[in-house]
Length: 113
Length: 117
Image (tube, rainbow over all chains, first blue to last red; front, side, top):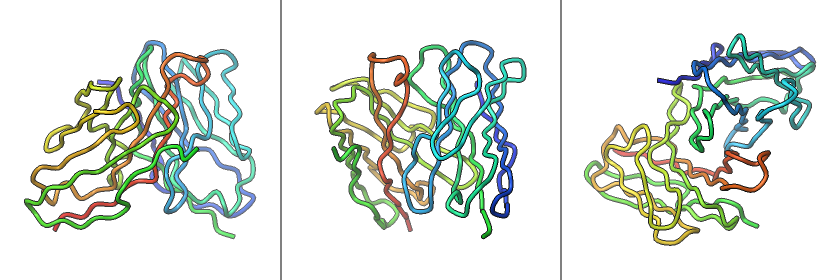
């Protein structure tokens, strides 16, 4: 069965530190990849998505992610985090043309001022 | 546009009670979904619908029923609540067709926090 792994369950950073959150998936076919963010007490919002083309995807709020097909990875990065980035981050994958998303277990990020 | 809305926001049930969660979307989306979110487990798909009058099982459908009588509404029912159904429930909706850039992007509601005692 297809799975999505987020290896870091909790990450604590100081403001201005760089961020990289890992996401790996197990499906070998065509995939669409997403990162969603959930700020405290709020619903999920789309940060960025990859469908095709340039494997380096830029999203909102300075986030970017790189799709590395050979590594089945879609890691999320931000060069300098802010306190307001404190949230839970979810990687999600859909395979082929499926409309169903499979979510990773999430990574809780705490940014200390 | 209100996007995706959910009612109620919070609910406490006793074991064995029933309830219905309502999801509504005003984006004319064909597809709608119900997820549950539990600590350390991400979001798991309960049921989904690909159009008015259609429903299908997701990853964790047991103990839940759904109905999609109108395109804009998707109801999630618990017939006999159990403590294992204590969770946060999210509804989502998505496009069919249109730009490939929007394909599969799901829009989420604010969630319903349900506690079953």
